[in-house]
Length: 70
Image (cartoon, rainbow, N blue to C red; front, side, top):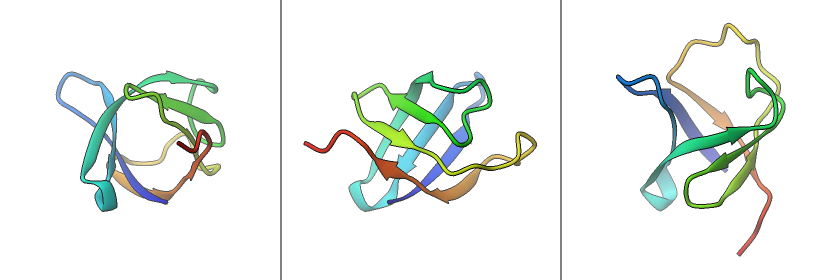
């Protein structure tokens, strides 16, 4: 699924899913720089992010895989 990751004014990382019109903050990350690991959103979704450079500029759009299907 295509998602957009951004950092808001308070420094909180959020994920926006256009097809669901859903925006949720990231509440935990498997890896410190998040790329190539699993992130958990406030609504409970877990997304596996692709490997990217730690210097990737936000906001950015990436292809993520949803792990916990409903």
